[in-house]
Length: 106
Length: 208
Image (cartoon, rainbow over the protein chains, first blue to last red):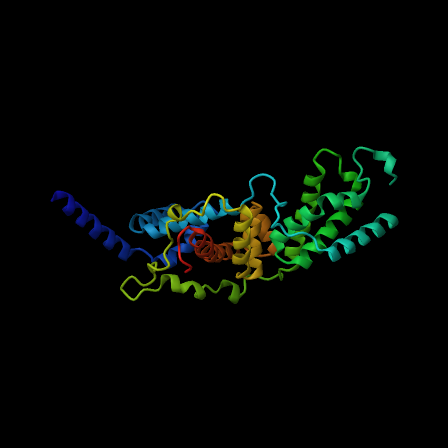
């Protein structure tokens, strides 16, 4: 079938290309840097070509970006749930005492 | 300063503000410095600074926002104090503990090992009702396994959205070193969050 011939050729091209490109391990620093600075043309092409051959790295790059969104608070941080840590009684007393004396001297 | 001189805008009683916002500021600081005693000290310093700069509070921003602003500065001061004025150490730059993700016995050594390649997060989304606080616990413990400065860099960049120049200033490192740190943080945290959040929280999945 013409379709499967096409698939075969595509796969061969991907393999040949992948052999000539740097490995995933070598390119992961670049993926992180793509979130930090504008990449040079050469770097952009390298990244695109590698992505063409490698779904895992496409996913990796999308996920490290998503991770930033996951840890970023949206609006005011919700810090009043039951599981949110609170100041201990000791710390509370200590800080109050410090504030009292600062108030007197100030 | 006398209390009646500046009625609307004066921090009339710091203890009152402490009662109102102490726990919030503590949790805010703890999320970033990840150490109770440090977070307590930072909260205390924040209120002391607030008393002193009493008149810089013009009542324009909400009290809580104003205090949070001071707190953030104190947090970055703490990061700075805990970062030796030195470039990245060999230990910090060492990525060998992550090599396992790219080890293969076939001709593709250096490419993702199928067992550790990024999973499809879309299919493993945690249940909707899982509380945001629970993600914070996973994220916090994943940060713990990074060298301190690297965790701090990641917090400043991704949690607080600081510019790289500011982060380099706080940690006293070059831009190149900053990139190296962020790469290590991402490599580590992506895997750690995948294992402990996406796969662990997915329904009907045996413990891995």
